[in-house]
Amino acid sequence: MKIRTGIALVAIMAATTMTAAFAQGLGADTYKAKCQMCHGAQGMADSGPGKAMKVKPVTDPEVKKFSEPQMIEAVKNGMGKMQPYKGKLTDAQIKEAVVYFRSFK
Ligand code: HEC
Image 1 (cartoon, rainbow, N blue to C red):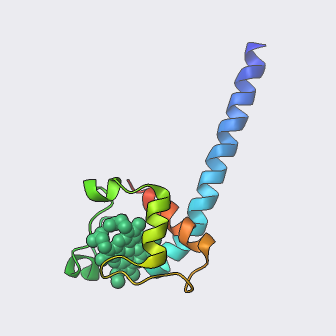
Image 2: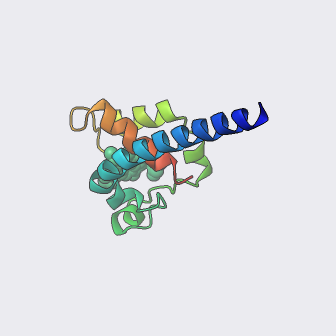
């Protein structure tokens, strides 16, 4: 009985990890192509344009306050110097890029 529960748990954990890795993999491409130049490879906004625009790093308390849906809204509608991505990227691409961005926290 105990062993079975153990195996089931490992299976569930493996499945969850794979789903997360898959979502991140998808988001990584969009993020690297469209977001990294301002938000940095690790979300730290340490790139040239990121510094010039004073983009906040993902570890900033102001950024941490954002929930995932709030971030999706910000990317869709634009925020400050960030252009709106609605119509430029699909909803799925925006969500995946945000999930990837949030994984740096
Ligand atoms: C031209 C530079 C630029 C690009 C490209 C860009 N952003 Fe931004 N982003 C900003 C600026 C400036 C803000 C305003 C708030 C700040 O300073 O962090 C911002 C804000 C955000 C926020 C709100 C939370 C926060 O960090 O303040 C999220 C989430 C975000 N961007 C994600 C993305 C994603 C995902 C992409 C790619 C689809 C992207 N950004 C592309 C410059 C950019």
